[in-house]
Image (tube, rainbow, N blue to C red; front, side, top):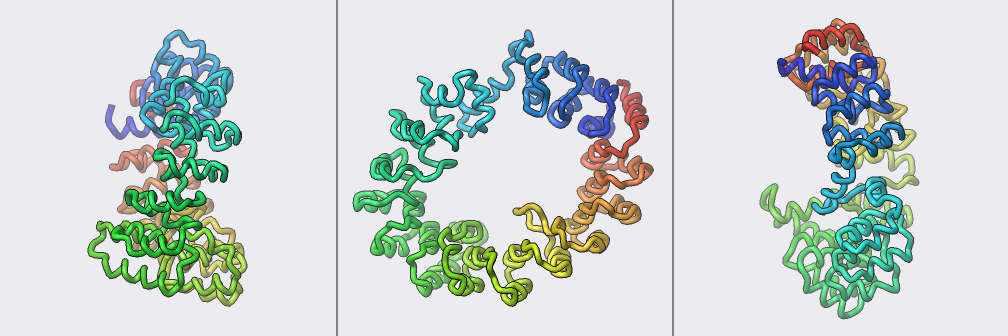
Length: 454
């Protein structure tokens, strides 16, 4: 089977409009069968039976999901082949042993009748650690047990992400423990001994303690002179650091930067992504002073303030920091022309969703303009308009960039003749997208299956 036709069939397998007979025939292609199992919801029994008959653990893993019926999951549980029957439990087991965080629902299913609480008391510390590092809503009493577990892996998992701060009465013990010190150093009430141990620790530990609110001023000042730029970047985030010193420290880091991949650049990246947790609680008048801070995370944090005066908001719509403009543009009252200008000039942020084109005030007529942009990343945004005119879709379907053509191939209003053309595109991604479009007629799907000999 040609690669293009194979890819079309895989796209059809995820097509929400694919009729039952098409799905049944597609199960003969393993890649399509896997796609059906992962993408289609609440599958009919006929399709489930065909999929299970393949005897593929990957397919069984996909089917053993809340998106499928309880009947399907019971059928898997009773399947004679152990590889199929235990596909999900073995997947969870492998993930646990590899140290990969398992989602609570999957871990609960693996635990069986005893539940997460039972698994938390399992004799195997690896399983206890899996619960400790996953169950963010565990009872406080159980977390206390795990924080005092005899195995350091369990204590470390219970102390860190995704949990809230540990109980205050346990801070001293957790700081004294090599396994948990780094997990609590950023917030635990520091003793003099803990300050000495953390300040003499590795770079990661020094960076964590550098943001601890209870760190004494003299220890803070020593860390402000730390040889590691990563540690110094964390000192910058402290509430008690005088503002003039904060700016000098930041300027010093900028002066040390030599290349795009050096340790100083990595340290400065912290200031692009971590915001000072204390600033939102400051009075408005003081927060506003940070809107033009040379330190990115401070001005962006201040820009998130919901109570900014209207004149300040208007000024920020033309701020030199595009991220500040994007943050402010998320406000409910942002004018459509501001949103259009922001997207047409800078596109969407790859980090935040929903995008600005999804803002209620984004003008519908602006999408057609985006389709003519020089940057293909902006042209592809035009396809987010559910009512995009057919002629605009047609232009995007002829785009030089495959990812733009693929976006056009997914659009619900694409004319069928145009979809037919994209089914034979040079890009496998485009033909898969075309095969998955609900506008593809069922008869055409059957014709493609005939062509593939299925």
